[in-house]
Image 1 (cartoon, rainbow over the protein chains, first blue to last red):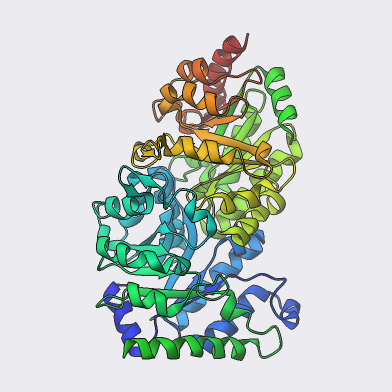
Image 2 (cartoon, chains in turn purple, blue; image 1 turned 45 degrees about the vertical axis):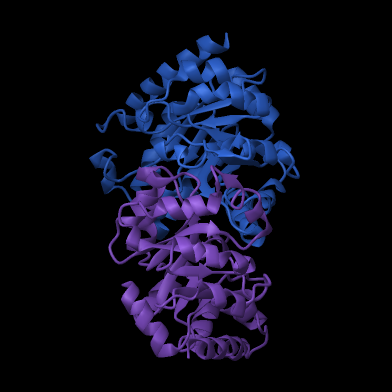
Length: 270
Length: 270
């Protein structure tokens, strides 16, 4: 998907909401456990109920890998369902991969070619040659971890490294990568006060912002400093939406939560 | 597996060789492509021919994920084959994972409980709360990226951050993590000159050392600075061993290459 198509979808839906599909069998409604593929059935119901309110879905690969081959099948069915039924949706494999060059190419093939995601999250620790293989795929997006939503972000990311913070160095350096136009960045909603500095370095890029909801991030703060003229934000909420209820009406309850956020977004955009 | 059992295996086999199973269908012998699961058949033959010369095997998950469910099945069959037939072998999922706490727990379950690997490689960018969930698993080992073998290691890892290099900070901080005795570290063979400084910070830990062979690292240099009184090294070679030949005798050719390295190691240990 092109960035332009993503922006058009955002304008049309008046939403820059992304829904995280972090599906834990211990948390989904009990009646789904009797189906052949509870994870996929859960995702399908959530997607059908919320697709008009969200522009993206972000399965977190850990939650599928934890169930082995069965989990990987659920992931494949989920992305295939999205691509077949809602082709306008921006899909994110939240996988946080990254390795030496020939290995990163294999990861890129896994998520861009085999599973046909629009984007994948990637960790920057191993530097340029671990990231550029992802960027080589046309109309695919590589979402680089910059400043994450967790407490551990302060261990290294915000530390000074040659006069700048590590996450700033990550942002700066990434701008010189080949095909850097295919980059987006992860910036946690719990670190909204950093966003104005971040926008000075990457004014035009899209940011994927996790941490609104369960992790305590605030939508208004994020938008105040993070919005740009192409919107430039994808706000992710996972647990706050998908686990709104564990009763038979869980999908409607999720839609209600998504609608709350979409309404806030619609106001902010107008 | 306990560290003690690993050390005993090393002493018994006079080897600290780990063989990387980075299986690319474009590089394996053509006759295997006619089998139902070429990747597993390749791995099985390599393992059967080299298990007496190596103490560990390290499938790189990217090379399995790139083939989707079929690839994940090959990975599962490979680890099951190792655990069933060569239980003394130390198994490494080279997956380079790492995410917020509840997600890292899911990754740990995927590799330690579902696939039953002895260890997994983890990236440190997201800090303490992304790593400790892995460390909570008893007799399982978390191999933290410190100084990697690629050129991109110089982008961030070797930069000064508050008076120390980033990889040194990663090493230092990790020592304070809960269950830090379950930590090992990745240090690239191509950066052997850094090893004496690294040993000052973590004298007793095991290091997984990729980069000997195809990437240009030198075994003698690594041992000179990296060995400790428990040996403390796992030297990985992937392409240099497994792709020694693409003819019908590929497994014997791999064993010949492994034997060369094992002989060198035997000399170094005596």
